[in-house]
Amino acid sequence: MDSLTHIYFAHKLLIMSGRDTSAAVCSLFPQIDREPAYFHRMYGHPFFQIKRLAKIGTGIYKTGTVQEELEGDYAASRFLHDRPRMRSFAETFECETRIKLSPFDPDFLSVLIGYVSHTYQDIFNNPMQAFLPQSVYPCGKWELWSELDPIEFRTILYYPENISAFRQEFFNDRLWSIRLDGAALIKAMVNRTAVASIVQIPRSTIDSAFESFGLEEVAIEQVKEAEEFLIEHEQLLSKLIRKYSAPSTQHKGAANYPVTS
Image (tube, rainbow, N blue to C red):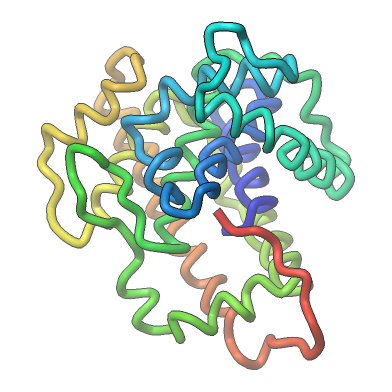
């Protein structure tokens, strides 16, 4: 998904879990690893990196400054550099929806929901090594991509008019109207990412990924409920990706494509 859609998705999850919606912008935190290119999706995206990076990113996004002990730190410098870009996408979201994301002062669980939502949602976009360093195998929607032109579908889907229409239909669906526990939602996103792996990820690795966030364990019933929602979400998302990346939806002319994750 493109950057703005990541914010829309995180915002919906935060509403559903009754958390602080200002943390929707934290769904862009993984994108600090776009520079240098060899870090992209391998530094900021993996689950085991999230707890440390989320804390750094939250402080810098809120204050616009780097703490003295973080001077020279790669992640801190990237968060500071990307802060204006993140704020611009948050402002675009506010303009489009007339929903305020500020003031930004979320609790850590809300930050984690926003952050984890990006890694999970990215399995629809590109192969995602979400469990580095414990597992090097990528997760992705292989069957969906085999049905589409795996290169050209992005060209069509991310055309501004198409992705805007996609968001309109996707986020106005009835499926967003339920309530879910926030921690259970995070664990469910980790579980569903693992299901998309090209090889089976050991249960111990999946559990370690969730434990790395420092959250308390959640009830199995709550996780199951969250997973049922995510499965329904994945089915709808796949359906709409097929619809809005079909050649018949292609527009002519040059496009200013949004930056993807």
